[in-house]
Amino acid sequence: MFAFFSLLAGLMPNAILLIICRALMGVGGAVMWPAVLGLTYAILPAAKKGLAGGMILGVAGLGNAVGPLLGGWLTDVATWRLVFFINLPITAFAILVTVREVPESADPGAERGIDVPGITLLSGGAVSILYAFDLVRDGGFGRPLTIGLLVAGVALLAAFFVVERHQGEIALVPADVLRNRVFSACCVTVLLISAIFFSALLYLPQFLEVVLGFSALRAGAGLLPLMGAFALTSFAAGPLYNRLGPKLVVSAGVTFLAVGIFLLSGLDRGSAYGSLIPGLVVLGMGIGVFFSSVTTAAVTALDPSRASLAGGIVYMCQVAGGSIGLGLNTAIVLSADTLASGIRVAFRLDAALAVIGLGVSLWFVHAPRGPAGHAGAPPAHHRAHA
Image (tube, rainbow, N blue to C red; front, side):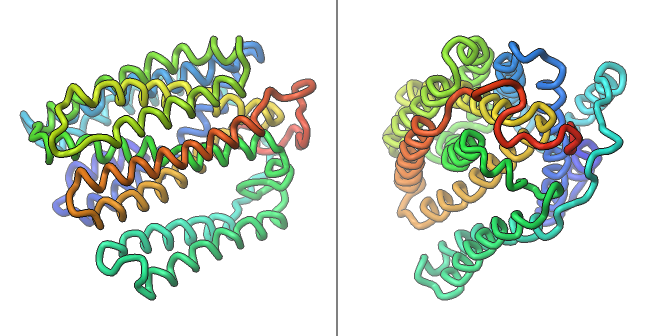
């Protein structure tokens, strides 16, 4: 699915059709990611769970480091369409390796229902809030339609949690999973923190291109300190997690994120690129340490049979928190007098959210107690690695 809509995206004649294809690429990515997490945690022994999260996020970090540079180069020397076409040989190789090497782990007796009410309420709530933020640039937060959409979005999200209690084993977030304090704390922390990563990936290249006058290729290269630190610390996070435990490592990652984005909030029209490097490196270290360790902490907080479910929920929190946080950041940036001043305020808001996330992490996140079947563990047949 990701490959097919990548091909179509590269062929699209206008922005609307391109955005539709990008959305459907996102559906493909959302199907892949939880399965990758679940399979990797299932393949490795319990003693290597920290390694699993570090390796997955480390490889993702390498891809994120190469992606902006390669995309900028393709855009400068040829056409942006190649950014999509290059996905085709990559996905073909991925499919070949998966079919040949990855063992099947589907459970024929697993629950196969789909939580349509939950999906509808969660999506409707997120879209309402995002659309409200989009309207801020036209009339501010005081516009009646904006207020109505924000209220509707919050109401739909509240209804989502009420409905989930009655959906049983097909719920997007089953009730027993929600009652697991460590898992819930990891998800709340991810919700608060994800805006930092999303906003940095959008607004740092814009600052480099619009304010500092970088080309697309130079802007991509300008992110290398961030992405390189992300990749390297992701690989290091696994051994650190096994040695120090989730509370310390997750909290350290959040601290790096808060400090990194705060350092970058000092940018202005007179900033030289060199002044951004310390913030880029610290932010990259935070991304690498945090996302790998919090994923491992969340997955290991639940029964091993729910590895894919746990990975999917964490990923859902990452995308939801990142999207809504990015929408709020965008509303702030568009309301500011200049791009630089808007980014500065938005990044400081992200730093404040990270401080709240640090409090949640320090208070609730800890290593799972007891044997593999953790508190609140369901019957082993529940959607195992579906």
